[in-house]
Image (cartoon, rainbow, N blue to C red):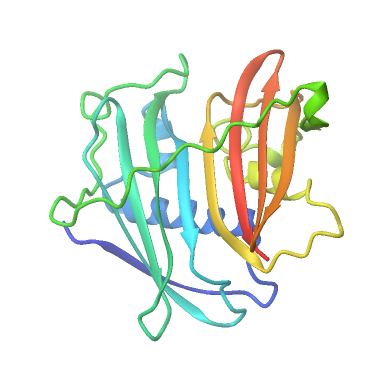
Length: 244
């Protein structure tokens, strides 16, 4: 099975974290379209795609107006999950983006992972090219004692209708918008260099996410770490690293 390729042009406004991961989500959908395994196809079977983790690196900021050439390929399902790898190159052949995500098929009624093969879900997998590195988990927030100084900042976000996707929950790309909304106006990062996120459970319309977050600067890196819960239940954890 061939590696799926697609070309995208960077808009004049550039790419926010949300825009970048929307592109990766759309390319993933395009890659499985010929196998009739898109989100719409799975919905007819009472199933849905969910992403459980991402770890993506960028070597530089994509330049507005330039063209990037994406490649993506997926591994066969193991333990109900499949890793999808991504690469993106500029016109000179330089690698601009590399990383991977972990995807699963979930029953829409029970909201539990299911065996994709047993449910008749078939999608292109590439076994000749090895997968990129397994996505690493985001960093945990450090919990300081009163003597060590202030702990994480607190915030909240209520899920609105515009956040929802066809699965009836907050789309994974919207979490990046919530995260970057925490950046202070004084922060002047050059570009997003790495993004790691783990999605633990779905956030539904009207739910309020209780957010803990920290912003740290080390050498030439600014790191935004956050985690969110709803009524004590973990929703997601994320680490965004920016070159400064």
